[in-house]
Image 1 (tube, rainbow, N blue to C red):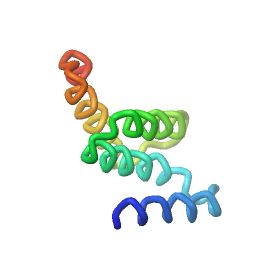
Image 2: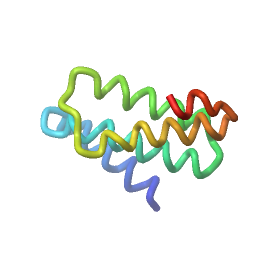
Image 3: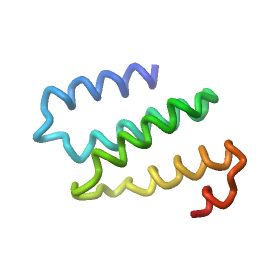
Length: 86
């Protein structure tokens, strides 16, 4: 259910790009968190990379910390504690 909501939100965001630019990276972070929980680290990486690319040069949101937390969880799951802390 959560995945469908995120994916639907991304479709709506694509239709209204000029007004949703700040929210789109957060949607990808949310999808990365779902992928992480499902054990799909490759998909989690992809969504984090997309979120980072979309956030470049944009005004950061209050929830930007979620990207860092998701990135750390994925690195930890890949047994890379130094990257997780960084």
